[in-house]
Image (spheres, helix red, strand yellow):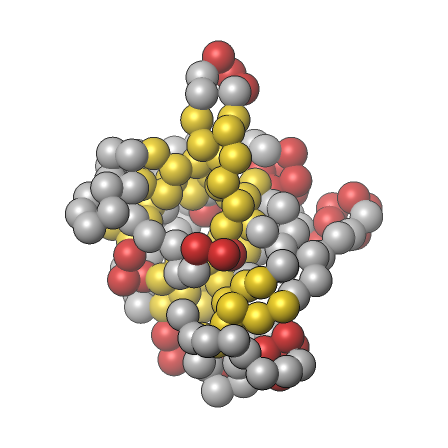
Length: 167
């Protein structure tokens, strides 16, 4: 798969080749809190207005809590009133996987992390301009990194070879 990641200088590079992150359920359970595990590994949903990232207004990047893949930026976050962190555009299209979700008697579009298949939330077509999309994401599925600490998200694949462009 090809993803966009941060290098050691805190620069976004990609898309570059990356292997999927596959772990045993016991490893996921040990790595994540019970709430993070329920949301990301078993397609759970946190209660609205309960997550610490709903009201986060700092500048930075939201990454997958399971594998650290960067997913969204604070520049695309908006107040949707839904009770979950909402974004109108992903950081890089290739970092997300969208799939039809027919659970709970509804038809929705599920959003997962392309690298580790963590359930993140859903995307709807009732968002603001310029995309009209609302990526409604569980805060338990996200790790926030402040803008001045993006080098902390440095991914080893960023140094494994030449990137094929920058997002």
